[in-house]
Length: 354
Image (cartoon, rainbow, N blue to C red):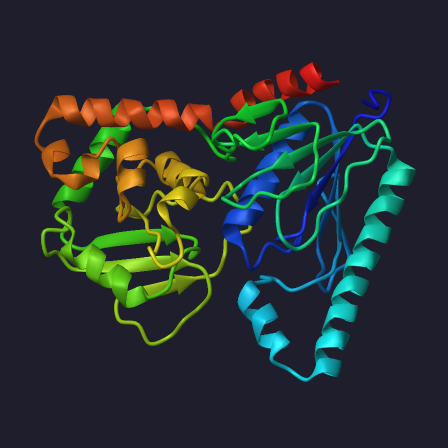
């Protein structure tokens, strides 16, 4: 490890520094930055191409230079194969050329910076092949996707049996204030149960196919008891939906959602299978805990693993012991995902490798 140069290069092709199109991915990136900064590293980020090529945000350099589509997918590739041969050939040529340019930029930067760590988000768009240049290569597996590139260590919320490298297995770090006042949280939960009109927040629209499906789920959930509600969605503005208010993505991750009555974690079964949910980490869960609002979900794994099935009945509002257990569980899980806790574990992983 290049200990003389405490610099980390984070390769994150799924977002740009503008953070407009992938709220969850951008939140993960900024949390990674805070972790490395707390350990004394200077951070440089290679991110997806945008209108602004370079940004300096509070001492962190962002190079928005990784070329390619926002969401590369197999459907687009399959559709191209049905096109005329010359068009397919040109498509493949430009795809390889984009990858070549991205590699050239990234490798040139690494050559000049000689970082101690290269941190890469596993993805199908672009990844660097690790080189013997003194840097530690860490791969972040943030969902079910796994690649065949080697690495010195990996980061995940669950073990990856096919990857035989040192690992940090922990919920992803989330920027924010970890919950301290349990009594205030319990009071907020009871306030929700008796309010006449419920304001439900959905922080991020990832994993959504049909907003009518969400409306139906919320309207029929036993916690609502038939009460009128408004759903507030932080994501793209999709018009013509009754009782849904769309808000632009939040750039300030310290922004609190405490003005809402209820936090929703919703994943469409058409997009998110059980295995993908198990290998992901819902940023919105921790944001809701920080806001001290009750949380409910449409997925059984989220309900069991994060909420102790409290959202499956109304017992939490009628039994003080169940309410106390629920809030204590949230406090423990939030602490696991705090930046200081994650930084300590990451530092131990780096030391064991380097």
